[in-house]
Image (cartoon, rainbow, N blue to C red; front, side, top):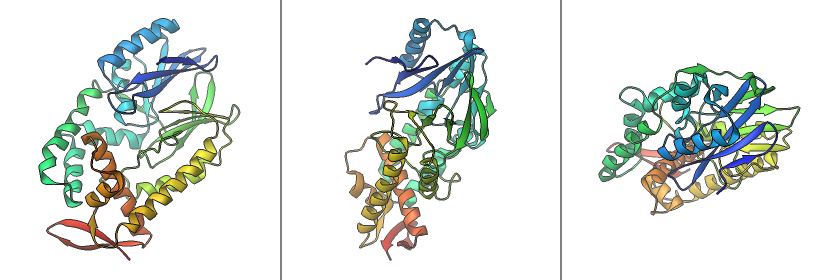
Length: 323
């Protein structure tokens, strides 16, 4: 795999390795007259450190040439290297306020999101004998986002990337506080994980974050699909044309998934049982975490639409059935 692809005089794609089935996450280096912007530098691993050392050397970029690190969202495969970069460059790390709040929940003192998520999973039927492994899995991410950066809050509106001014647009769903960066003149968008070619972005429910993440995602896709985009630079897979068509395709995909899950609820089932019926029983711990969170997000939207309802909880277990 060629890790470095120069797309234009200004935009270079860097494939940062991941220890997951996705294999890599896309970072982008944007050249400007005042220095370089790095978008989403990747997960902090020894392999990623080595790749960045080699990449900057090949591109002739010194650490002091990097003027800012900009994050589309807070997920570890995008945020993880930010503190490592900041320690070497002194550059600001820009992240949305909503995203930064989740950093504290996920990797702050005592990692409060871990307890919240494990309690959520238990109420939705996740087996007790899997809790210890899930707890360990979540704790393992702390090392992959450390050292953590000092964050400068980034709001919607104009943001300079290189020598061009983009519009930062909040696009919830895959991650609350997720931002895409759109240049209307050049018809270019850096879309993070909001719209991906070939694969469907995970849309998870997290406690105390977003009441109806899938509903927010579908609304955002409908709006973002109206942008006039000639080239989209995603967080995973390759840059591509056809951004608006892909946004519409993702909307259709989720409506099909909603119908599938609704159809499984002729008898009361927990979210865990729906998850197993939908995604199978050969999931890794990493895959199970996202599959169950996404199943819960779909069931929440189905309930909000009046298509399913909760059955009277038994011993704290939440189950759903069709209306």
